[in-house]
Length: 171
Image (cartoon, rainbow, N blue to C red; front, side, top):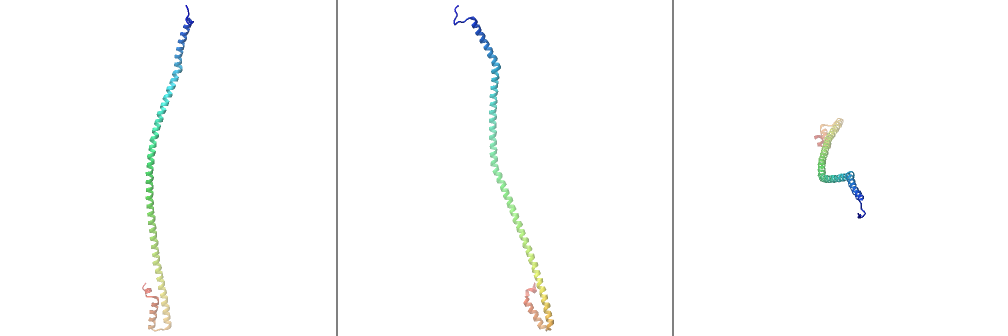
């Protein structure tokens, strides 16, 4: 028997056994190495997919929060305007109260001044009366000293009254 490519049965047998051994080695390696790597890659893929979903959800939440804050900012302008108008109203009330208090105080001061003027007028009138009494007493003393008759005495009283004025006696 001539050998083709120098093949003998031992070589074919060794080659088949080697192929079977490699096949079983591939199966064993596939079970021991490839499956854990595949599982790790699958887990990684799931993790990345979950993170992408979470990121999309976070993005949606952020967009919703942004809309809420923008609405609140618009509402803040309205709130600020309401607060300012309330403050203006309170300021106007305070202003009116202060003006009313000032007017009342001015009225009290004027009334007190009028009362003081009336009292001063009475005091001056009393002083004038006292002075007139003193003048009358002096006149009486002069009349007694001069021993004047009734006509001269009446003329002196009339003259004194004219000097002092009729309005002094009337008050």
